[in-house]
Image (cartoon, rainbow, N blue to C red; front, side):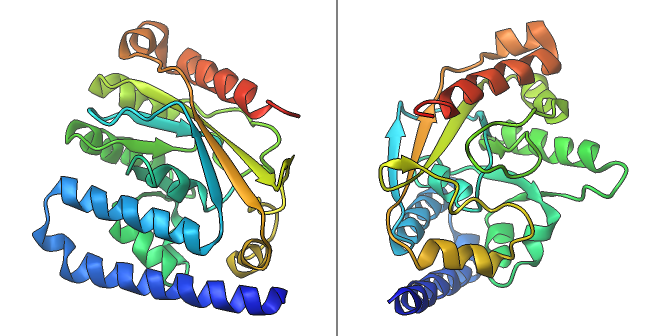
Length: 248
């Protein structure tokens, strides 16, 4: 039964990704930014539905202005959980761009890729983030720099918080909590030496995956400008860490 479920869901997900690529190539060039965002939002919801991922949102995202969205990082699903309610251009590791099919789609959706092996990678990414924020786009950041098992939050890197300070935007901390049924779980966390296919097997062959997404109080630009990026990163980290620890 698990194998049948996996093949069915994977086939549906691949079909959705191919549809997304066609939309990127044939439709997006003729659409304005708001309509592109609406399509991205619907697409994310469809993907979560195909994967049988139940989502619950606490609080509500601000949608009337650009923000730096700061999240703890557990899975490749994180981007789509936020994207289902708040379309966002994410900063992601460059390896994602090389993922079959899905990497092409993520790249076409405006993801900023960071080449961590390059000396000036942070400066280059910060410039791209600043450009997007200045153009009215929200940017998503995983300041842990890697994924975790979802049970704890690792220390945040502060460098890229400067993009929010320099462009005058507020920072929205967001906490993600993963469940298997009613219990907190790290079953679908994308950690260790897993391949994408191995992780998708863990997700698509099972039922009961639920993700809570909690929007925490804003860190205003006035606050971040006054205290600087290091203290701001620490404030966001502590807020998200407290929220992630709920129920443990």
